[in-house]
Length: 480
Image (cartoon, rainbow, N blue to C red; front, side, top):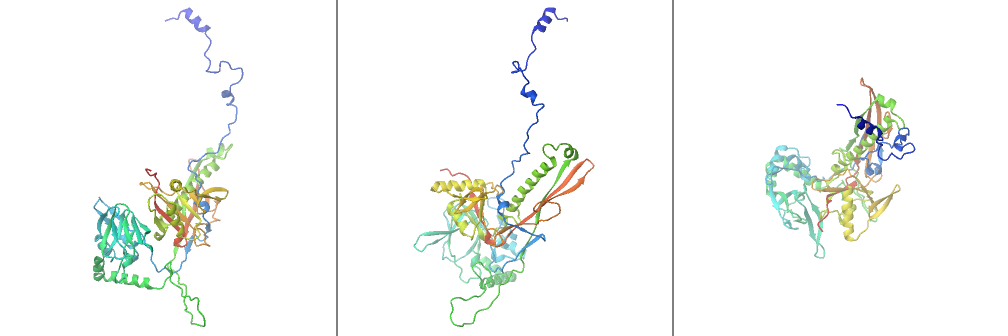
């Protein structure tokens, strides 16, 4: 069908449509001009980069042999660990037999059949908030393992008031201090601050096992004998000394005994293979070198993982290697100034606190409620919040549990102060940064250039009280 001439003429007379806003232009538009201009670009950004205060604040020891041995004095007092449980329902809770060796009296005992039988004799007992498990001075008739809940140890003070001397939480135990005593009695009272579950084992059952199993009886006897050996307040073999004497008395002699099985730390590593296409490496290097940018961000990721390992690694990380005697629980849930003071008082020369940012905010809320203003400390030109002059550094690598709780760490650092030290080795082949190297791995048939990026590191706790942990730190806001 043909179009009428009048319609064709009308369409020809109408002006062509101009782009919106450009009808009045009398010069080149900015949109067109940008086609000839050079764009100023930023380097590739990365959200996961953090301050990494732990890596910065640790003194690093150069480990030339790849292994660091921590020599200590002979330890006579065995530290306590934590027993673990398996739960198949509200009423079906069992002790994992292997973890009974975390109890000081069973440390080193290896008869698994006896441990299994002993674990099976524990009985589940539910407790309500406010219930007193036992009182100071009463005969110790049972041993307890805490499955869940928070229990306060308390005594009657000099002036008749109640004094809380500690908090017992999940995995802790009560009662093994009675081993080897003819008339065992509780040294403090224990009250449930929350509803909880404990597992109880009567002492007559333990006596039955001791009478029936010679190996267990011998182990208990050796433990009791070891506890009778002279030791200092930290449980180390004592060196006899005299003071304040006059005249010419015969002085006691002795020697400093060493631990015959010191712990050794081998350097751990974090690795990845960086792949860059040769076309990209050859052609696209202005204004920034593509390979260098890829390497920069890869190293940042490795350093982030390094700090995560220093906190969480089961072999050498702070959270898993802190001595259980250096772990305390918050008394009420949120981290209060009282909790921080107790954590601080557990060691000399505390250099820093390390906490999740949400834990720091929770601590500040408790300070606000009391009208307290935490101070600050100047660290390398940065104003960092501090408590009692000790800086509090944020560390997002400290985990937050499903129950919205976390931990706060307190560290003494440096070899000179018998603290915590980082371990690495410098001078490694093709070193890119101290303890980190980048090794060329060749070009494959797809024209991909490959680089092996490796960081070597570890951490050592020189003496147990170098690290303290405040556990069960509640992060949420209270209803009030």
